[in-house]
Every structure is written in C-alpha cells, then in structure tokens.
Amino acid sequence: MRKSCPTLRHAALTLFFFPLLLTAQTGTIRGFVYDEGSGEPVIFTNVYLQGTTMGSATDVNGYYSITKIQPGTYTLMVTALGFDTLSKQVSVGKDQIVTENLFVRQGAIQIKEFEVTAEKQEAQTRVQVGITKLTPKQIERLPTVGGEADLAQYLQVVPGVIFTGDQGG
Image (cartoon, rainbow, N blue to C red; front, side, top):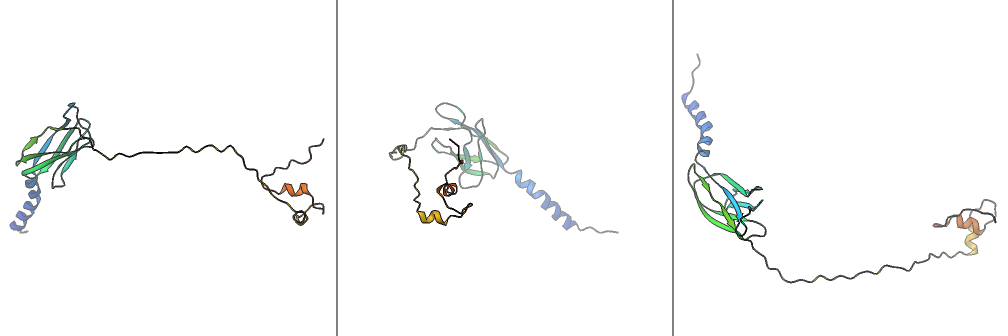
C-alpha cells in the first residue's frame, strides 16, 4: 500500500497555482494615441510606464495595450518622432482595465543654422599621351625570332600597342 504525503501534495499545488493567482491580480492600460491637431491616429509610437520595463508600441490604428500591470499609480509616457513627449498619471487597480485615449501635440526641434557648400569639378578634356623612350641598346637586347632585332618586333611586346602586321600597300 502506498502512503501519500499531504504536505508535499499541498506544496506542489501551491507552487502550481501561485503564478495564476499573481496574474489574476494585475491590471491593463489600453487606448489610442491621436494627433491633437488633426485627430489622426499616431502610428508606431512608444507608450510606456515610466520607471518600469513595461510598454507597448501603437499599431496602424494608434492602438496600444500594456498588460500584467501590478496595482498602483504610474506615469504613462508617450514619445513619438515629431511630437512633444506626453506624460499622464494613471492608477491601475487589481483586475482593472483602464482605457486612456491620449492626444499628443506636434512639436518642432530647433537646431542651429548650418551651411552646405560644394564645388563642381570640371571635366578633364585634356588627354595625356603616353610616351616610352627607346634606345638602340634596348632594341638590341630584345629576343628575336630571325636573329636581328628591329622596331616592329619591339612594338609587338609594348603594353597598349596592338600590332596588326603588314597590311600591304
């Protein structure tokens, strides 16, 4: 016959259900982020709880949702490129869903004046001619086919020169 330990069974059940109890005591903040001037949704902007690692990005409709928030009072922050940063105090209770529609104001950043200058480079119309000086001594040192060095054989081995042979005439 097998004896079971009730204390061990209770401990196992507590460890199993404890995380479920913790998540059941959290709240949610959700809503939309709009442009205050036009009323258009502000897409792909950051909405987060200051001082925490919890946050969300708005979707194509400007909707955001931050879940599993422990009960308490938080500062909800909205940062978007081209808009002023918005902060708003929000209180979240146990098992509470808080709806906060946020309106951000378009902002501008002042930067110092700067000047861009450029110069046009003129096209080069002058073509450089390559010159190779040749002495009679260099011609004599060339390996030759017929035993006698000449200028035509030398030109066949100079880089950049295409020798087509005797064309007749």
